[in-house]
Amino acid sequence: MSEKQTFEHIVYYTEGNNLVMERKFKAPRAAVFKAYSDSALIEAWWGPEGWKTKNTSFEFKQNGVWHYCMTCTDENQGDFFGQESWGLAVYKKMVAPEVILYTDAFSDKDGNVAPDMPKMQISVFFKEESQQTLLEIKSAFASEEALMQVLEMGVVQGMESQFCRLDELLANGL
Image (cartoon, rainbow, N blue to C red):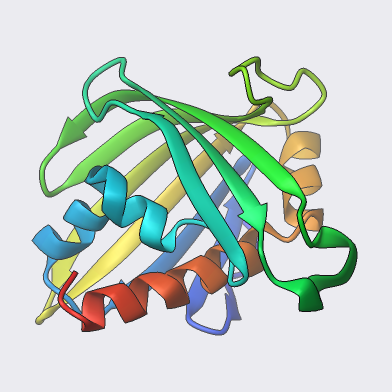
């Protein structure tokens, strides 16, 4: 296990080919779970600042598919402006408001998984902690090299940026 590190509000560490990220939200567990399980809500916060997410498919059920596109809408992000990043997730298990398990992969607009990009097995745990929710995300990769590729792409910084957007949504009562 690597030493725990902190980036803004996220605590993270690695265990072999797994990345673990933890972050607290000043909101009830049911509200944080709803933000993950409702198509319109996840579009409102998923993706880093300056990016807009559009779901082309969102079936929040076992074996349901979530196919989405994040588009950079911030002209100040230089070469990223106008860039699209597609993702494809398949839900494996959900127990409201405790856990969501799914696979996640980079894809193209037709839902074809990008063969040269890492695929992840994601476990999201929603834990109540004295009027707050501790979100624990475990991402399992096929190899430590795949994990390092995603870390070098800035996954922790990107997650914190989108969690700031989630904070704002939760503060406004969803």
